[in-house]
Length: 283
Length: 283
Image 1 (cartoon, helix red, strand yellow):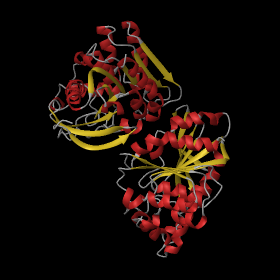
Image 2 (tube, chains in turn cyan, brown):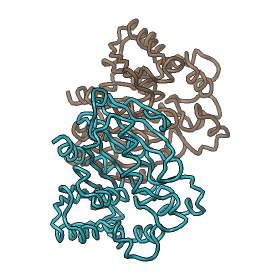
Image 3 (spheres, chains in turn blue, green):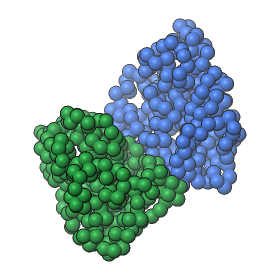
Image 4 (cartoon, helix red, strand yellow):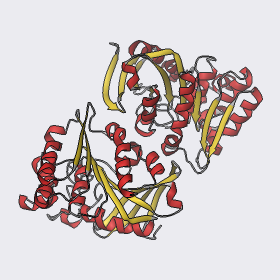
């Protein structure tokens, strides 16, 4: 572990280790938190890295508590890296007044609008600073990265991958916000972090990135519950399907009957996603 | 679902359903909460019932969020029934001042000491009222019951089984409070709920029940983490081993190297426990 990391807690789990860290982030200008699951194979050598981006209101703990991913990550030899969902305690006046923006709602963009632009650089954090820190602190094969996420974090995973073609060997999402420019959550967040000019929003919208840049990702796996209360207004998977079809991007979009938006849904299909990533990461 | 049950929420999970209920309890004199996981097999017929008793500070949600049990329960066709850890909002003056007694600390005894004796009857609740409710509300094979638990709930599972020889087809525990009469948690709880006369405590202490009644349970499975911070002072598995040896009670006690007291530990060995119960329940 690097001297720049502060270990908050550590727990043996499925023969490996769940650990929670804090560190002083350059790109976010203050303390950031993240979690790592090291599978048992990491004691013998470097292992591939799978990033998970969480949804609104979550912390770096949520996934490792609720998703049931460690069992299979241990079997498959995958390191899981889970950042927090935003900077916290930034001193920005309105950071805690609305659950849809500010704390736990970073939306994985680099904010350009003040006061958020001083701290909310989640895209640079999860794609640059955090991977560099992971690469020098843990037995990580940094040439083998994959990314997935849920809801706001599904949007984040798709956008991180589309903005860096060729970087991630595999990409998947649970109930992602597919077209943030065309839903209330995304419009509020982008307006807050990126300002009123919607032209600037296109660089952070999955459907716009697919439309402008064409197919540039490995085949996508996306699961969506049919009883998800956010499906119609916020998630709009039909817009993702349409953009993938138009751009020639391979997509497996599965509608899961009766499942809602929570981790009972995510945990049910976790094994499929982990195997999807393991196949690409260990090929 | 019976008219006496109030559904709080319901979630599809691994092809079955996690559901949270509230109802007016006779034996606890007020509202009680519990959770049920119905595996997919319950749509076609009755399934065996596995009760899980949770530890201090937990609610009826904790296990189904953190333990990762639904995946295998779905495969094995087991119904999971998880009561809350105590009555809540009883109006008893000191119910919320100490995390070791009162709310979320019912210790699965029938209190005889006032004011607790008016409401805290968790033994009768989990062994009589709740099973009756489950039997008439869900497709449960009430002739096939098993029980397990964690910490305070491990104590609860062992005591419920020892006080009703022959009832549960299998019994197991994670890091149970093995000898409550001989540890601070148990002494405080028993003193509070049962009064100062320690003779009355013996009927609620696993090691005392084994010593007085002899072997009367199917082979026990107990897992204990070696890095559990409560091991030496509160849990005392060596006293359980000693009592089992003296009484001839078959026991598999496994010390798990480096694991702590939390659900990262419980989830790691959950599959072993579920298979232990399924073998007995479906024999």
